[in-house]
Every structure is written in structure tokens, then in C-alpha cells.
Amino acid sequence: MKDVMGVINLINEPDDLEELTYHRAVASVPFGGRYRLIDFMLSSMVHSGIRNVALFTHAKYRSLMDHVGSGKSWDLARKRNGLFFLPPSIEEVQESLKGDLFHFHKNKDYFLRSSCDYVVLARSHMVCNIDLAEVVAFHRETKADITLVYKEDKTQDTARCRRLQTNADGRVTVLQDHFGRSDSDKVSMEIYVLRKDLLLDLVETSLAQGHDHFVRNAVMKNLDRLQVYGYSFKGYLAVVNSVPAYFRHSMNLLDPDVYQQLFFQPAPILTKVKDEPPTKYSARARVKNSLIANGCAIDGTVENCILFRGVKVHAGAVLKNCIILQNGQVMERASLQNVILDKDVRITNDTTLVGDPKAPFIAEKSKII
Image 1 (cartoon, rainbow, N blue to C red):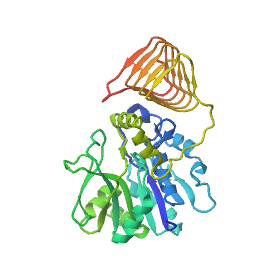
Image 2: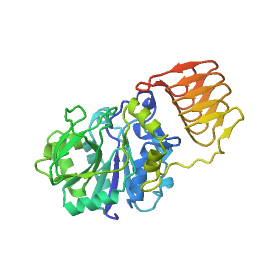
Image 3: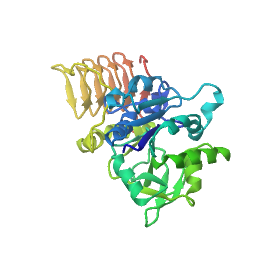
Image 4: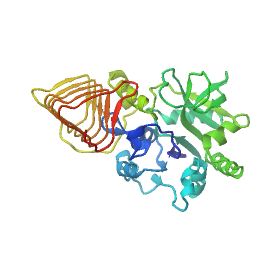
């Protein structure tokens, strides 16, 4: 994998996460108690042996820069290769409306200066734990122009995702956009492997024709000309680009099998290290089937919930099927069900909030309710 570079593409990433992305990019949305969405693909690349990783950011990337930092938590703080943060230029406001191929072209020097021959392109909202070395080996074995990773899954009905069809040889014959009518169970994971020189050729050719989106213009329009093969992924996949999908896949983490598969197989998911004390449970605390990070203080009832670092649940408060992000406070005798609270939200005494599992109630960051 020394000749493979990784690109996590955040340009025009699909986003219907509403309040959760008012102040942050999709990649930095908290997930699973103490992680961010980008941790999964970043960890997969590092554990697969990729030591040259670039983040092509788009907008609202301050929290992402704060979380990723130098890449030290992922062993990417290196003198050679390592982590590259490539935000958009501010020369023109209109540049923010252009597709990923335009931004690849603007940062062409990053690709040309690297000695790597292959590129792994991925998104952050495809939450999985994948061995990319196996995907690259498959790509070389089949001598494909492009390898696309997909998952056969009937359950991704709460998120927007592309679907594809393959023939008996594994070649991709149909690739439809998010709004397509294909009834195929094969969901594109937006992970692509191709040679660097082919990527740069597709960038130049597509832009010359007035097109600037990698998948829609460079891949979908060249399925007949290019050998595009599908690699079937067998692990757990969470497509997190809508609120119902975020809530459902978060609740799925309360299943020990799902949690084990996503966070530890084939390798542990890494994240930014924070040293905090263990969670404190009072004698009145009642906790059942919940995922609770360190630094919390529980003095009420918590059932089927995910609590991030530093959450305080006061006496008499009852939480059921809730996701409480970092430093949230639920005061005395409050009652919450099917609720998502962003960071630093404070729920006052005797407040009752009830959402629907398919449309949970969301409180914006730092609000007092």
C-alpha cells in the first residue's frame, strides 16, 4: 500500500442532517458516543497501510480542523506524506458551487508531487470499518480501470444513496444517482480505487467538456468505455446523510454485535484523544441498555440512549431513546423520548420533549429549552 494515496472527498457531500450541520460539516458530526463520522474512513485508510491522506474540505470545516488537527491520533503527523488539509480557495465565491473535479484540478500539485500510483477516493458519510488493502488487491487482480465498493443491503431506505447493477463478471453495468428508480439492493459506498494518472485524465477531460462532478460525469458517463468493477463489502454499513438514518444507525449501536463489528472489525476505530474521568453514577441512577461516554454524571433514568462526553442527567430526569451530544444537561424531572440534543444544550426543569422514531426532535447547539 506504499503506492496508494487516500482522498476523503467532502466536496458537495450529500447532507440532510438539518440542525446537526448548521455549524459543522457532515464529516465532523458526532457519532457513537465519542467519535465523528470522519473517524471511520480515516481509521480504515490508516489501518489499511495508507500513509498519505488528503481531506478535500468544502464548507463549515472549522470543527473538522479542530478534531483532526495534525492527524496525530491516527499516526498521520509525519514529515513525509501524512495528513493534508486542502480547503477551497477564496478567490471566487462561485467556486464553492462547483464540483469535486474542479477542486481536484485546483490542487493538482498535490497529486503530481506524490510518488503514489493509485488513489482511493471516499466519502465521510459512509460509516464502515473496511480493509482497503483487500479492495486495492482486488483492483489489481481484475485489472480494472475503476473499482467501486458496494454493499448488498435492503435496509438503507432512510438515506440518500446511489444504487448499481453488475453483470456475471462483476462489472458495473448501471449506476444510478440518488433519485434513480433502480430497485437494486446494491448500494454504492462511494469508495473508488483507480490509477492516479487516470484520475487526472478524467479531471482534465471532464472539465474541458464543462463537467465537474467525479461520479456523475467522470464515472457514470464512461461506464461503457471504462472497465468499472464492483467489490462487494460484507461488513456493517451505515449511510448517514439524513436525520432518520443518523438516529436509526445510532440506535443500532446498542446491539453488541453491530457495535463490535463497526468499531473493532477488522481494526479499532481511532479518534481524537480526550482525558476525562469515568462516568459517575449516583445511588438513584437507573441505566439500561445505553452507551455512555466518560465524563458524564447520571442521577436520573437513562434507557436505550447514547450519551456523549460530559453529559449531566439530574435527579428525576427520564431519558428514553435519546442521543445527547457533548456537555448536554438535562435538569430535574425533565422527560425526553426520541430526542437528539446537540452540544451544550440545556433542558430546564420539568420540560417534556417527545419525538417520533422516524422524525426525532432535534435541539440546535447551545440552546436552552
